[in-house]
Length: 562
Image 1 (cartoon, rainbow, N blue to C red):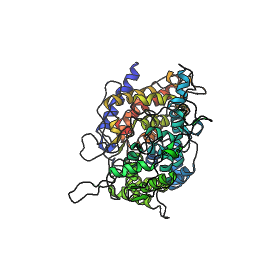
Image 2 (cartoon, one colour):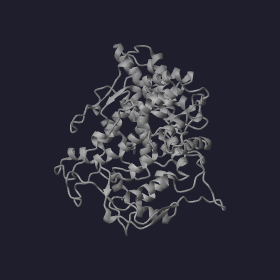
Image 3 (spheres, rainbow, N blue to C red):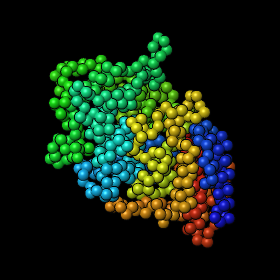
Image 4 (cartoon, helix red, strand yellow):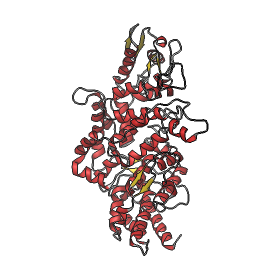
């Protein structure tokens, strides 16, 4: 390592410490620069004394990371104008990947074929490629949030087509009606396999889907007030939303569904399951007797589809569903510590969008992102810790990447957050995971930000900045995957700034910190960049930008969105 690089790294370490200690800069507990040892888990930081740039804050909440073009667009259109544009935007899709194949379609030992047809690989690559460059950023962020509430995973069912079709439900339904999304999920074959509704039959119905549908996808286990607080009985205990009898009869109502088959294969052909197609009726397995659940009566002889509709409607219309869904979406888009009033305002929009429509997700998302607690000059609550996926994409978008997504899906597994492969139906972390050291605050992503993962994030930041020239080996196209293009950081915009280190600092301050750096922090960042010299002006500009980006990406301020 050259003496100049050592000097820059030393300046970076000093800057990270300044960010850690400076209350006026909004620093929180956490990491320091360099690649030395794993730092302690950072806590959401106190709010900066000066107002943060709200256009950047909206980009943090509603995209996979701010870019200069995105921030300029938000400023030009205003919050509601940009939201309107995003509600109409398209570009991301998994539809072309949802092509069913037989389970024996790959020759024995053909690992490349198996990876393409029976793993998350192609769908996860598309997820990241679209997250980095596709224009419909808000749709993707909402779909990502929904996929962490309604979970089906490659850990349970290995089908590329099924993973694609299941996640397409969230892209398609991100701004639609929550009832329609619930109906689509309930009859989705991939979910049918994952939670055992497929081939559930009268006499011995599986209760897995019924239980998780109530507990995780709609109302939650206990009765809620509209502000998300628990309703309590006379003794002060929570009041259950449902009973074992409710679960049993819902399971009975959901019997009699099986998989469509690839081509003209027989219904008994277990190698021809069509995971990308909705499930189809299997009348002989359906329990047609009367069912009672959640105050609903399904009469004897009711059709199968009517039973499914009754289950979805009973949960969708339950009084606890609006605050339960509202809190989850607020947690994933804005803050895991919303005030009760914030939850109540969003829940009210879920219950009635102003035109008498319940479950209008477009209205709910607008309510979340335009609320005073999201758009005020500063948040009154601690910030939101970036989960590893968002830390990766935010860094890549700030630098400027083109990608086929392959490198991201390799990296995400090392952080314990391989998208579309959650360890269970409970996602990678619970929404109510506590902030370490706090008796009251929540910080869901803290479950993933272990000391080891913080060191991995430091190493990733170093690899993609200081060592992030286009020739880096992990950026190359994967030879075993047809049609891949690899990944390329686009340094041209940074190189174009030449020796204007102040302009580089301005851009980093904007994209990483929403203009939240104090003067001492800006000065330290500039010193680290200026320490890099090279006879080639273009290379010097790139290396200066890389060093300052590394320092910024390993600071605790970057990891906490406020």
